[in-house]
Image 1: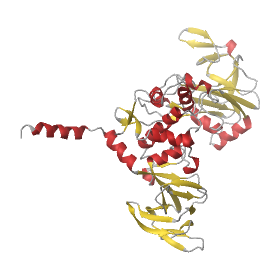
Image 2 (image 1 turned 90 degrees about the vertical axis):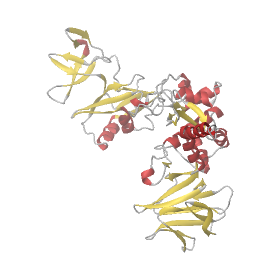
Image 3 (image 1 turned 90 degrees about the horizontal axis):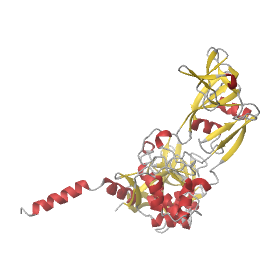
Image 4 (image 1 turned 135 degrees about the horizontal axis):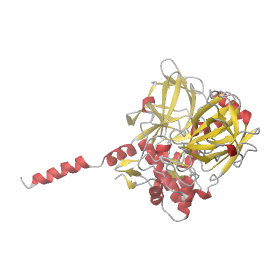
Length: 455
């Protein structure tokens, strides 16, 4: 009896100390997750559903036994007073679903279950939930099947297989670490860039499905916890520290040098924007500073990402974040917050800069060749890129790295695409082409992680 006690205690201790990552990952990987579908939806209160072989209905908590069937291959879900009515082509109600989404809709077959929502098909099950006089369409889907529709939507299917596998592990880890992101709304994740882009069955490709299959059950961990595997298209030559973007200081999302992204088509870019268009964008965003006179970069990270800009107009000035300025101009063409600005004919060698008077908000022009920096008792020559405090005539004025507007448009030059945190997808592509495997790629971009199966 005494000889058995240590063994029992050891077994108990092993059960207690079993890493949380294993039980948590297993539970989510063998169950289903709920993805709210927004991209295929045309109307909020009428949803068209299709299936090649009719429909089966199941209780959410019991997928073993059907609670109903519909022989029609095309039906409409219409919001009613007592529930969500499933209506056939003769406008007859064939079933009324409860509003809480507790009934699952599947194809009437055991193999390749696909449900059409409007024009797109999705694997596994559909749930319909009524909220605020609107039908929420939710894809109730196995995690691996979900990834089939995520990886090709987030990374080109033509990329090297090792890059696709790195994306699969990153997307799987991101899904698990954000599994409660929309729990208050009744689902886990959405199908947009707010979570991960998910396009369902129509977007699946053999190469990306293979990448998901060959990394099945593999996650990225930091200190035993699945990481929030953030990724982006192209870095600026350095990835960005998460604390500089969102304020969350995550030890595995640190800045790393990234020469692998240099061949991306988004490594360097530029575009021009009309001043009138920019003024209109400012006003529509609630920023009314009169006619734009110039833009000043007042804060940037060590990698060059712009944190804050000051926008100066004839009626005053406004300081906003670099990302806010990017979104205000247009995030599609304004690809990242690593940028500089050229104001028409103005250039960095110009000695004319705008300053704001201490008594009025009206900008004035001073000649930096006739001004100097006050540094204690010393006076230093002024340059456009280094000025913090300068004196013009007999007054002290604040000027910074300023881009005056001197024509009808400004030119914005930048590098990289996206927020710059975590894995660079084009960097992963290049690493894969150079012979790195998916685990090496992930460990390069996510500092100090482990890449492990969950069993």
